[in-house]
Image 1 (cartoon, helix red, strand yellow):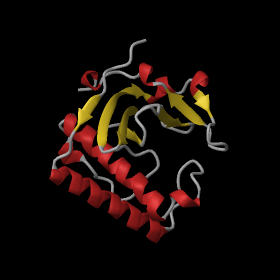
Image 2 (cartoon, one colour):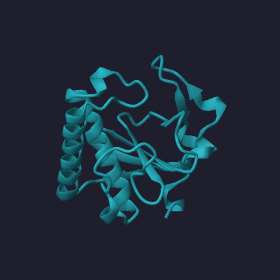
Image 3 (cartoon, rainbow, N blue to C red):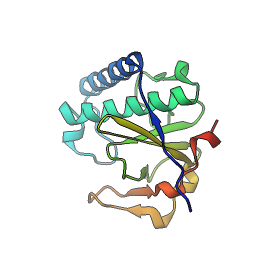
Image 4 (spheres, one colour):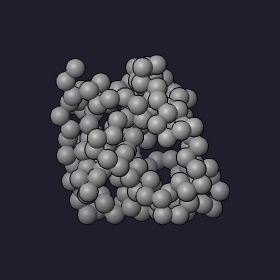
Length: 167
């Protein structure tokens, strides 16, 4: 299977600032509510610099996809993290990772009705790799536990559909 060509995304200053503000808002809320990270991410991922980095990556990835799909006005609608909610309506979740060679991670308990989009951000370069229906991502062959104690599905980019097929 041929991997879709990733789409490079360049933020405007306004988009960058809005994503940054959202990340700081999420971080402050999570620390105030003493929220635990998902899938046993550990205490280091719940507060402080590492947690903020994850929020910055996530908010930026969401911004990039929303802009390309013409859904920027529907971005950051949830004020609190809710299990099962989506980043963009009606059922789109953006999964952002910190290395371009990383695969899409899908949690074992992910809703089978979601559309999952992989974005990577590394060295100030943002790439949107493609998407997959979550039910199609939950294959036994992709189940791995590389970090130890945090089993998930790792979907190779070759199995993603180009973003153009989502619009």
